[in-house]
Image (cartoon, rainbow, N blue to C red; front, side):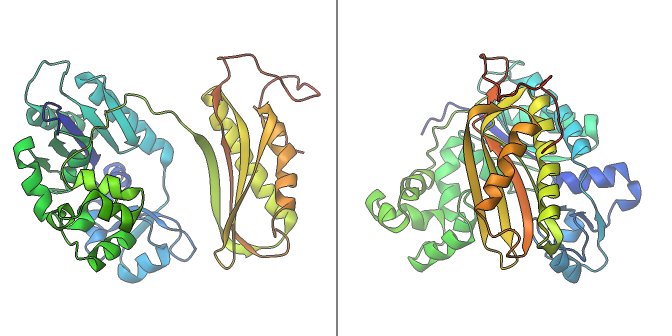
Amino acid sequence: MNSNRKIVHIDMDAFFASVEQLDNPELMGKAVIVGGNPHSRGVVAACSYEARKFGVRSAMSCAKAVRLCPQAIFTRPRMDRYREISAWIMEIFFKYTDLVEQLSVDEAFLDLTENHLDEPSASLLAELIRKDIFEKTGLTASAGVSCNKFIAKVASDINKPNGIKVIPPAEVLDFLATLPIGKFYGVGAATEKKMERIGVKTGGDLRRFTLEELTFHFGKQGGYFHSICRGLDPRPVKSSRERKSIGSETTLSEDILDMELIQHILKEQAHSVIDTMQKKCMGAHTISIKIRYHDFTTITRSITSRTPLINTRDIGFYIPKLLENTEAGRQKIRLLGVTVSGLFQLNSSPIQLRLPFPDKVDRQTLP
């Protein structure tokens, strides 16, 4: 393994819920759940550590969450506020290094092998970063420090909340040997059960299998598992991540059949998608709609346009065509979504607009 790299994974502690507690001191020390109405089909976006003590977890249905923690205080997500604070946190990261790979609004990898302070100790830098975050935002973060991204990410979860875990290169193999397989990043519940069926409960158990054996049991993932249980992860920290799609989706409060209402919701989602595209000065080539029926069957329908999609009129042209290939209006629907992909910068090359040309590239009324 490359033991010369110094990689840090910073993960904010219960970020959304902590922001809500920060902005509303009355919520401090209370079970806070950020998500939908507990009497609706919404899901938990985040929850405070006080709520987690009752078994509440992200992505759990709000209905189940309120059963587990009846005293919980529910609040709607405020993404603009979370993004605002996230931007402050990212600015702090860039004070230390240009190699910052943002994974989401509340976590990032930093390569501190070479840094702006010329400080050789990555653990000291991680502590300074956590201190800066707290002083700037009033929020706590946890950190994992090691020689690659995989180990650093696993480590950041060890001493949560508001903690740090440093795993020097010489200790990586011993650390992984006793680590429960469910703690391995990339091992979900289904994979964990499959591993247990073949006698794998820790990283040490996994290390006994050859590459061929792991490939037999897990296909392409076998190579990944073979590497990580040996502490090998050559992936660099990438300072920029190319966005592949922009989307909007809604879980409906009740199942619907009304085609007029279905089209109205998709139009509103298209407006939201176009707003995001225009803020980023981007166009797209492919539009997809996502539908989840009342029985939880989920389908997507896509079209790639010969001309770029740059406004709501372009997207609106295709929505009825995509709906024709679904059971909309015949089967009740519980979720709708619109996504564009094949993104490109509008200022990077000349584009052919759809005829007739619009007066301006702007948010326009859908047909």
